[in-house]
Image (cartoon, rainbow, N blue to C red; front, side, top):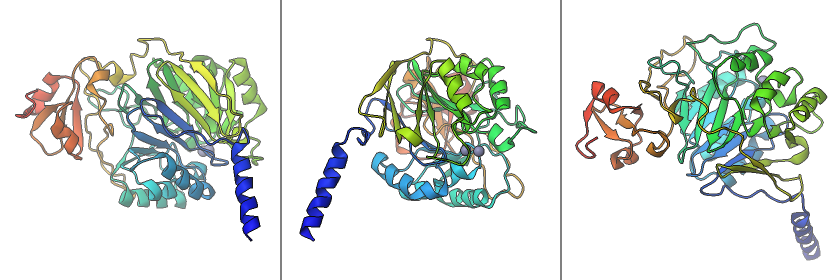
Length: 407
Ligand SMILES: [Zn+2]
Ligand SMILES: [Zn+2]
C-alpha cells in the first residue's frame, strides 16, 4: 500500500513537471487577468481587474458546474462583483448555480430576453434569492446614447454594446433570437481590449458594425464556440483581433469550431486558442501588452501589443464622459409580468474611479439627500446602492453637498 502511495505521488509529480500541463498562475495584482475556463462545450470566462474586482461571464454547461466551482474557489477571494449571463442557453447558464454557491455573487446581469426553459426559470429564481442585485443592461434613459459601463478600477472598464433595450428592440426572426441578443461586452484597459460576444449571430454583428463604436480588440472571445455563421469576415476585419479564444468541448457534436471560422480568423491573422485543445487559456494585460498562456498549449507564452488607438471610442461612455451624460444613474424598471425576478436599478457595480474620468464624479447613496465626492470614505463604508453623477451641476439638481467631503 505504501509503495502504491509512493508511486502515485511520483506520478503526480511527473505529471506536474510535464510542460504543457502547467497550472496557470493566480491573478496578478496590478494586472488585468482574463481566464477562459475549460468547461467543455460551453462558455465561461473570469475577469479579475488590477484592483481585484471580479466578473464571471457565463458558467458553462451543468456538467461543468463542480469543476467551475472548484476553479473559482482557487482564483477568487470573496463574492464575484458581477455575474453576466450572456443569454439563457444551457451551455452558458448550467454551471452558474454551482459557481454562485461556491464563491457568492453581488450582482447578476442578463439580457432580460424571455426564454421559456425550466433551467433558465430555475436560475432566475435562484439568483433572485442568492444574489443581491439582478439587473439588465439598459442604457440610462436620461442619456440613451451613453453605453452602460461598469468600472472595474484602475481605468479598466466593461462596456455593454448589446442589447440596447428599450432604445432598440431585441433582434427578432434570426437563426436563434436568444443567441442574437447575447450580451456583448468590451473590456478595455489602456491600449488593450477584449471583446466578449456570447453566442451572437450575424445580425448582432451587423447591428454592431453600424454603430459609432470602436470594436477593435486585442483578444476576441469568438462567438458561438466557433460556429460557422458567426464571426463574419466584415466583423473580424473591424475587430482586428490579434488573438481569438474559442470555447468548445473535445469532440463536440456540433463540429465546433468550424473550419470556416478558423479560416476567417487566419485571414485576419488572429492567433486562435481553443479550450478543447489548449485547455484553460489565460490572458494577462498590463495595459499595453496582453500575454496569453494555456494549460496544454506548452509552457511558452504569446505576447501581443494592444491595438486600440488612443482616444478612439467616443461612444464608450464614462471613459470619456459626455458633458451632459449621467452615467450609471439609477433607473427603476417595472418587473416583467410573470417573471420571477425584481429588476433593480441599473448601475455599475463599482463606480469607475475618478482617475479614469477627465472630471471628478459625484455619488449619492440610495435614500440619502446628499451627494459625495467619489473618493469620499463614507462611500467606501456603505454597501447601499448608489447613483453616479458625472458633473456637480447634475448632482446639485437632485441633492445637496455632503458635510464630510464638501463636494
Ligand atoms: Zn446559445
Ligand atoms: Zn453556446
